[in-house]
Amino acid sequence: MDDLERDLTLQNEENRYKQLFLVTETFYSLLDKDALLREIIVSLEQLYPSFSYYLLLSQDNPIQNELPIMDLEYDSENVAAINSYVSGTIQMEFSLEEKRAILYAPFKGKQGVYGVLQVIASNTLEFPKNEIEFITLFANAAGGALENAQLYQQSRRVISDLQLINETSHRLNSNLRLAETMTYMSEQIKHSFDSQEVGFFLFSHDQVIANVLPGSTPFFSTKQARIYIDFINDKILQEKDSLFIGDLHLPKIYDITRFRSIMAIPMIESENLKGFSIVMHQEPYFFSFEKFKLLQLLIHHSSLALTNSILREELEKMIITDHLTKLHSRNYLDEKIQLSMKHEEEGTFIIIDIDNFKDINDTYGHQVGDEVLIQVANLIKCNIRGNDVGARWGGEELAIYLPKVTLETGVSIAERLVEKVSQCSNPPITVSCGVSYWNKDRLDSYNYLFKRADEALYIAKSTGKNKVVSQRNSIRAS
Ligand code: GH3
Ligand code: MG
Image 1 (spheres, rainbow, N blue to C red):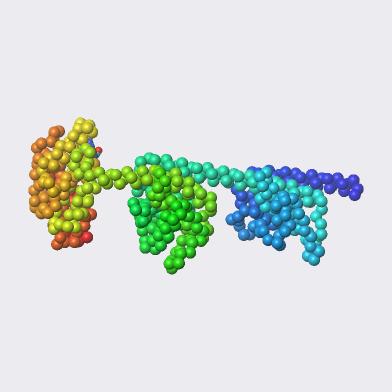
Image 2: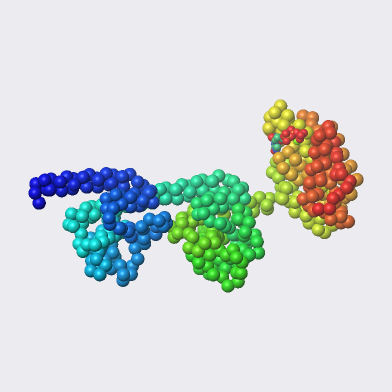
């Protein structure tokens, strides 16, 4: 080698290392693993246009097929690659027959090895020494950057997991109605886990039947869902532990839509099994184990708030008296009407709404408003008999149900009340009433009875107030 040649070689070397420096810099700037892998390949194409290469990666890579990326397989054909991966050192293979040399360089980071770079040089039986050194440095740079991207993605995931749990607990503790709470949970889970179905189930007191809770996706109210629910129900009762199933095969399912990936988490409160939640997807092995752990965490964190919310609503149902007016509660009234419609011949329903009540509140304040409500409630109590039900229907709406009473009698009771209120109230107010009626001769329903009274009330309000309007004569069958 003469001086000029040596100079050229040195210059060449220098250029290569400059290139390596630039490549390394680019690698470290990429935090997205896919983009980084792409960049590694582009750089190899530039540095070694005559070699072929593969990235053999040790972790699942949802990567584009067009790139020379493969999973690192642990089989006998891959001895040199596996050796390189396990020992973290350069390995070489030569094939006399095929006249080629293969070099394996591990993608090493600080915490581990992430795969192996396979470089194939055709028409030669050895790699020049300086190439080996260069490729080693290149693979180290790529390994470090891969580790970097992986750690970054992991930390992003941890942050978003924590955010999910934090936001959910926050919402659960904000005293929403059960239906709202569950719908929120369901949406969060669908979004964070990409699941197709989400269901929540509560055991009956004897722990035999699992009832579907609100917020569950509609699928869980269908007949097909029962097979899944029963299967999971039994398993959870037996094992009292979460289920993580990648490819479920239940013998009795013939539908085309089969759910094969299933996660189910028991809801445990004070060591008692209260219910469970199910998350499903049709694709097998859809959920990762990390997602499963996250769901467990989420459900464990939410169980207390959920059971509290359920208890509160049960309690509300048990309360049969409204604390302000001392009239019956709406739940109590609902039940009484439904029972009466089942067992009796006829009945009349009256909705009572205070006229311009907003003005009373605005003029005299809320407390006087409350007193007016109590006055009307007391007039109702004086005007009905023992079997009748006077109730607080909603905020300022009151109601009366008169079992076994005809429409004519019901209307006259309502008219008497309207008159009494306008005479006795202080500050003076008036009320409007809508009256509806049912009897056994016509097909009817509780909801429709309520709707007719509400429509009548609307007419009373829009035609001057301080009056009674009864349902239109034609009762449509529901
Ligand atoms: P209308 O004659 O059409 O019924 O007019 P309105 O002002 O009575 O009706 P609107 O629905 O506009 O207002 C009802 C008001 O009743 C608004 C709400 O603040 C008040 N209200 C509801 N529940 C209560 C309660 O328990 N106490 C008091 N003081 N006010 C209530
Ligand atoms: Mg009103």
